[in-house]
Image (cartoon, rainbow over the protein chains, first blue to last red):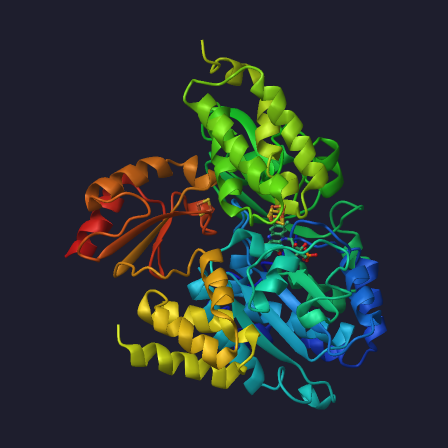
Length: 409
Length: 155
Ligand SMILES: Cc1cc2nc3c(=O)[nH]c(=O)nc-3n(C[C@H](O)[C@H](O)[C@H](O)COP(=O)(O)O)c2cc1C
Ligand code: SF4
Ligand code: FES
């Protein structure tokens, strides 16, 4: 497949605006400035692009909601907080092709009708922050950012916000709280950010990879894009392959390719003997079927979720109790503590799993954990609490005997 | 570190971004960066300048992993222990580093040279196990490479 998202990353000095311009960079923006905002949104709707940050919401719809809301000014915020363990794809774009992202954000701003763009980038991404700062400066110098862009009458600026080490701040409402100078606790929805976001104004929050698709959609058309990969959720996807696999890395492939192909043809095969995989980071449920297709619907049907596309491979030397313990430790640490079901649930689950890990499990507690997982899924306020138990409960369901062997005599 | 430095930084940030509550996190980050922690006087300074109550400022500081009111070591080691790194022996790296430094995760060495933290995913999972020391990235760690890195920093 022709590369769309990563086509520039291997070029020498790919971060430089001259290199970006030499291969048609900012041409999509030039085109957009001759269109009406509605026409831009229609093209994105036609592409059927869905968000790549985890929730898979249609981008055209989000932009159209935001543009139609009353309330000024509006905002567009790029979510570059990339924190889901196993996810390292946005970093590839941020570090190697910052102008692709800037061009996309400017287009998004034009489409929803705002001059205010933000990038919330995780604080640990030091090299990427430097690259972004430089790219913003270059884009201003060339007239792609700032007042009266390319003499179109449209003005747009981008401000960077740095995160400070909090996974839950990647959740969009928490991210906006963080930008407002608050603790990064998610808000219960509705209202959605499109209605009431940054400073209470209509705000479109889009993931880095999501936005990186936009220039190609504008240049080649939404219809062209909608024919790539899985018809239900088309397009290229950046898959992050990690764990016990021979060639971990980011692979740009069309949605819908079989998991087996990703691991064997691209990832050089499993290191050791295959046992299970988390297809969407530690927030997803374990799968043992390598023939499942990597698109949102197929993975959901198989009982897991594709999320951000963080495929973590686990081999047969690994104890599933250790996997459960590692993931629940993570969620207990990252829970913001606002809802008791998530705050207490993750801690109690951690205590129980830790007992199993030490050979002191109690048999009846396995079913309690399954029940706790369901209660949290149904009642937690944000996605973190809803999926915090997914890896653990799927480990119990698929590998129950491993847990039973660790029941106290 | 000198007081003047963080004050200058805060003034720079507020000049550029305005004295609104939305500037709180950028200010705290700037202080953390130049001082290595957020001193009490800096909290008072922000309270006056941004008109945000101190409790809220402490609330924000305690929420974020990269902000702290405790003085940290010259080198802050952040070793990842999320699943992809864990599956590539990060626990073993932790043991090695703890042994080399003579401190446990969460502690700062008595000479204030090192702070060791175990952190969630750093977005370096294809080069696991990985860690950062201040703003530098160290990938594909092995027992030998980890020992060497620490020895070099110890000088
Ligand atoms: C706990 C949690 C963490 C999240 N972390 C991220 C993240 O790091 N990056 C991201 O783009 N989206 C993240 N999301 C999803 C965002 O809430 C939001 O759906 C996304 O930024 C919207 O952009 P998209 O539609 O382009 O995917 C997270 C969600 C939850 C519940
Ligand atoms: S589910 Fe957990 S992380 Fe989300 S708001 Fe509730 S306590 Fe916070
Ligand atoms: S899991 Fe260690 S860097 Fe991602």
